Length: 349
Image: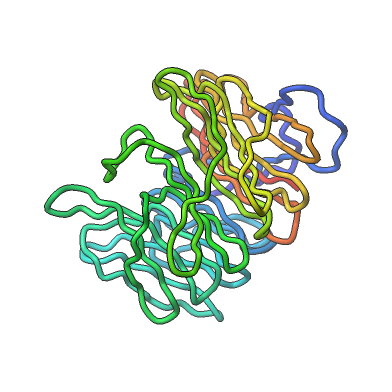
């Protein structure tokens, strides 16, 4: 497979949504290919400047070695990869009679399967080689049910949770979880209410969210969460009506409580959030009928870069990640045009 390495600034691809101050860093295209060459690009993650990966549907992981992106052909194909510090990652792979989990630590791979049939992990977080959480769905005699497993250093155990978990975030040894059932409410028969929980060491406890005024038929949807460190966190999403975003929302944890930021972009849903390696954030913004945008929030100021290649009918941000210890970012994008679908890996440095 040939990867096109592009070193020029992405002038036509990324268009400023409004004037911004001069910056020393820019988003650039790192690699691009037709969709039928790469399959669907998914989440992107990074363990360091010379270690990044992109998960692809049904194809080997795409790995960055500090110089170029290449197929990882010597490992099984995972559908989910979770980093847990330098040199440590957890992978989840399809298997007919169990969930195959492989941990990379101290330079070697270890198989740590979850012994359940007809199950699939949908979200995971790990704080190290001895601590990993995995939430998923299991098909049983009464339909789909939500499940939660915890690796405690010696074995996986099933842990009860007050609500189904849709995403995780970890800071040091502390783990947080989102519960946002969404419109389909797979495996969930309860009330459609977004919640944020944290692990106390013995149980999952809900943390109160501030009151929000919802329009008739509206819901608060939370899509992603990041915890730069234990006393600071962000959760992003939207207020939706009829499945469409009415306005974007951003919540901040100050060490004691969650608070809504006043910024409410109209007709927008924030789908992903990542620390920028400094004092700010990068967010992925979805706007129905328009291409997605990369949004920067730092020191109270907002800037927006629209992912808008010429002739493109749709551009969707599939993944967003910070390179730990740096201000470098990675993002994956799928763009659709009359000529076909392209997959892009973007970098900010």
